[in-house]
Image (cartoon, rainbow, N blue to C red; front, top):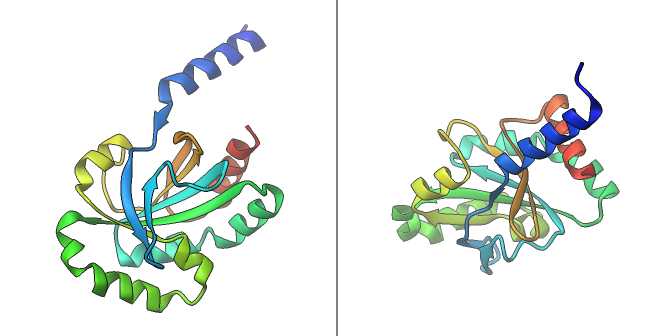
Length: 168
């Protein structure tokens, strides 16, 4: 018979084995401000979306209603979207970022959308991202510790998991 102490010890070991830190990356938001993440994440806890393709925006948007509810309950929660492109695309930054800026009428959302033009390999390895076919959703604290990570569009199951992670 497994005791509660055994389960708690297993949970602590599992958490410590999977604890990772968000890698240091620099990007610029759609308002032109430079950020160094995770240092410049403003929330005590931050939901961070990493997207690789324009068509993944619908998956990011699918989280909107649930995040509004969570933000109402957790005042220290901030949300960021990190469109992530290869460093080579930096030459077209003005065009790419301008197109995104034009498609986002809300200044708060533009301020929280930080485009990364980086060497994606080390970034993806640090976040244990195997491929770019789905968005990544992470819960990251102010120190950069990753407390929860999943991929894909919103589902009730993923929303409940995120809420549980926030409660911790």
